[in-house]
Amino acid sequence: MTAAGGNLISTSQLGHAYGDIVALHHLDFVVPAGRIGLVGANGAGKSTLIKVLLGILDPTEGAAEVLGIGVADDPIAVRSKVGYMPEETCLPLSQTAADFTVYAAELAGIPTKAARQRASDVLTLVGLHEERFRYLAEFSTGMKQRAMLAQAIVHDPELVFLDEPTAGLDPEGREEMLNLIGRLGEFGINVLVSSHVLTDIESTCDWVVMLDGGRVLRSGPLTGITGSDTVDVELLDDHTAVLAALRKRGAEVEVRGAVLRVKSADDAFDLIRDALAEAGAGMKKLSKSETSLEDIFLAAGEAE
Amino acid sequence: MTSEQGVVYDLGYQPHDGPRLGRRGAIFATIRDGLRRILGIRRKARKKVMPWVLFGIALLPVIAIVGWSFLVESVFEGLEADNPFAGHANIFNLTASMFLIFTALAGPELLIPDRVEGVLSVYASRPMRVSDYLGARAAALAIAAGGFLVIPQLILYLGLATLDSDGWFSGLVNNFSDVPKFLLASLFYLLAYGAPAFLVAMFAKRLGPAWGMYLAVMLLSSAFATWISSTTAGIGRYTALAALSINPDIVTDWLFDRSTFREGITGAGFDPVWSVGVIVGVAVVTWLIGLRRYRSLL
Image (cartoon, rainbow over all chains, first blue to last red; front, side, top):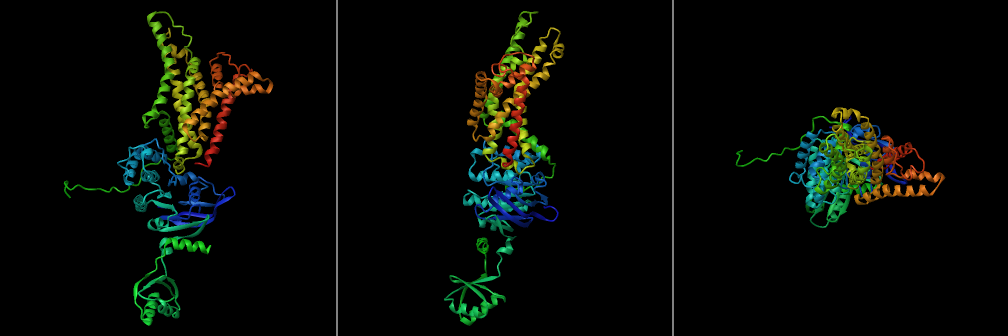
C-alpha cells in the first residue's frame, strides 16, 4: 500500500512562497498510510501543499516525499502513483463522462481496452453509470464532483489527493461523497482529504494534519487527538456543592452550563462518585468527554 | 436465491493489475485526444462541421484539376491536358487560405478548453511533463495539418502519375522529386501558421476571440509589413519579414523553383532563406514561451 518505511507523506522544512507572500512555513510532518485529513481555514495553505506534493509548484525551501519518492527528485514517478481531485472543476465540458474517464485512465498509462473497462466500473462505483454517456456540460454540481472523483481514482492510484471534495454540494450529496471517500480506504487507496469543514474530516479520516497560516498546528491520529482524559457530568440540580467537593479532592473542573468537565490525575469517575455522595446530589448523565476537532483546532490556534 | 427474486451484486472496486504504459502512454493518449478535438470526433455535431467542411473545400481544387485532366485526356485521346494550375506550389496557394482558417480553429481548440475548464489539473496528476503536453498537442496539430496539406498534394501526385504518357509507374518515378518538396513545404506551412495559433491560444481565454485575434495577426501582419517595408528604406525594410502568412508562400516557391514576385519580402530584396529563418524563429520562440507559461499551470 505504501513505499518502504510505511510513510505516505513526509516533509522536511517544506516551504513555499508566492513572491513575498509565504504560503507554507517550514512544514515538518510525517503521515502514515490510511485516510488523512488536511484541515485548515481558507488560505491556510492546504491547496498549496497539495500542489507542492504533486510537483505543480516547486518548494522554495525544504523537501517532501510522497510514497517514499522525493517530489523534487522524480515528480513523474510520484505522478504515476497518485490521483488528484482539485477544488475547482477539471472537466472538459464538450466530452461525455465515459469518454473523459477513459481518457483520464489512458493519461495514466492504462491501455485503452483496460481503460474502458475501468472507466465503466468506476463510473458505476460513483453512481454515474446511467449518466455516463451524457455530456459533462449537462451535469449538476453533485454529478460533476462525482465525475471528478472518478477521474481521480480510475487509474487505481496508491494515493489520491482530494481538495475540498464536498465544496458546493447539498447535504445529501455531501453525505454520499463522504461515504464514497470512506470506501476508498477499503479499496486499498490512501486518501488525503483537504477540507475546512472539520466534521467531514472527523467522519472520514483516521489521521489529521492541521494547518493554520501555512504552519502545521498538529499532526496525529484522530482517535488520539479527539480522545480525552476528561469526564463530563451533567447534574440534576445546582452544581455548587459538587463543584466544591470535586475541587477539594484536587480535580480540575470546568463549568460548561449544566455540565461539569472534570480532569483528575486519579480516576475521574471515582472522584465524581465520591463528590456526588458527599454533596447528596443527583446526576443526569456521566460520560467521557468528547472533544471535537473544532475544539482542538481552536485550542491549538490559541496556543500558537 | 431464485431468479425471480433477482440478485444485486456489488462488484466493488477492482485494482488494476495489468501493464502501465507510463509517459509514452500518456503522450499517445494526449495526441489522440488532440486529434479528436480538432476533428470534432466524439463531440457534438456542431464541433465536426467546420473542420470537415474546410477539409472538403481544400480538396476541391485538386479534385477539379485532376478530374479536368482526366476528362481532357479521355475525350481528346492523345492530347495532354495543359492545365496551368496543375502544380504542387499552386495547390499550396489554393489550399493555404482554408488551412489558415483550419489552424485558427484547431490551435485554440487544442489549448484553451484544457486551461479554462481546469483540465490541466488532471494532467498534473499524470506522468507527464509540460513539454510532453505541449509536444503532444503540437503533434496532434501536425498530424491533422499534415493530412490537410499533404493529402491534396498526394492526390495531385498520384493523379498526374496516372496521366503520364509513359505509364503510371513511370509517372510516379518521374515526379518523385516533388514528394520531399511538398512534404517540406507542408512542414513550413504548419510551422508558419501553427506557431502563431498556439501563441494566441496560450493566452486567450475564449475560443471566439482567439480565432479573431489569430486571423487578425496573420492577415494584418502581412498587410502592415508589406506596406511599411515598401514605404521605408534602410533598416525599415526588415519589417517585410513580419509578413507571417507570406513567408511560407515564399519558401514553397523556392522549394519548387518557381519565381513569384511578392511585394514586401521579395521587393525588399530578401532571399527565401530569410523567410525560413523567420518561420523557424517564431516556432522556437513560441515553444519557449509555452514552456514558461505552462510551467506554473501543469
